[in-house]
Length: 240
Length: 55
Image 1 (spheres, rainbow over the protein chains, first blue to last red):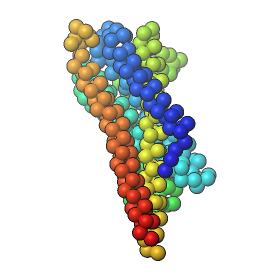
Image 2 (cartoon, rainbow over the protein chains, first blue to last red):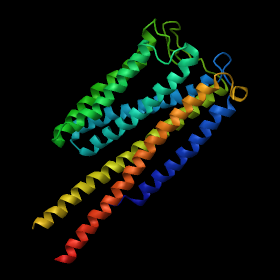
Image 3 (tube, rainbow over the protein chains, first blue to last red):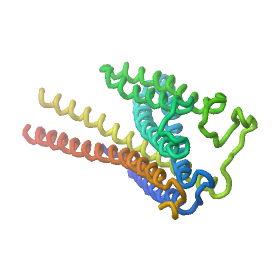
C-alpha cells in the first residue's frame, strides 16, 4: 500500500513541528513562566492539564463529525476516523485526569474527591472506554460501524456535561479559568501575562499533537485493513 | 527542586512524568503497531510472490 508522497511529507512535517512545539511548551511551562503565588510549582501542571483536555475535546468532537458523516455516507473511512479519535481522546483525557490528581494532592489535600467535575470527567472517560470495548464485541463490520457512529454521537453528551457542570453547579471546588460561573456570571479569564502566553502555547501544541496522532492512527488502521484484504486475495489465489 | 520551580515541585514532577509516560505510550503504541503491520505486509507480499512464481 502506498500513500502519496505529498501527504506523507506533510504528516512528517507536522510530526516534526509537533515535537518541536512540545519541547518549547515544556520549556515555557517549567522554566520560562514563574510559579503561581499560592500554589507554587503544582500550578505548572495546569498548562498540560488544560492542553490535554483540549486535545481530548478535539478528538471527541471528531468522533461526532465522523459518526454523522458515516451515517450519511456509509463510507468506512469515517469509522476509521471515529476509532482513531476515540483512542487518542482516551489518552488525552487520561493525561487530564492524572495531572489533575497530582495538582489536587497538595492543593486540596487529596488525590481524588467525588466533586461534580471530577465525577463527570470519570464518567466521560468510562463512556469512551466502553466504546472501544463494545465495538470489539460486534462481529458484523457494517453493524459495528453503525453502532460506533451512533454511540460516538451520544457519548459526546458526557463531554458537554463535563464542560458545563463546573459552570452550573455551585458546590464544585474545581477552579474555572474561562467562561461564566455561579460565582462570576460575567465570565472572565483569571490567567494573565506570561501564564496566558504559556497556556495558549500549550493549547496550540496539544491541538497539533492530537491532529498528528489521530492521523498516524488512521494510517495504521488503513494499513491493517489493506493487509486483511491482501491476505484474502492470496488465500483466494491459493484455493484456485 | 523547590528553589528552582517553587513549592510542591515534587507533585509537578509527578504530573509531568505521568503526562510523558502516557503521551509517549500513545506514540510508541501507534509506532510499534505500524512497524509490526509493515512487517506483516511484507510477509503477505512475499507469500503472494512465491505463489506467483510457483505457478
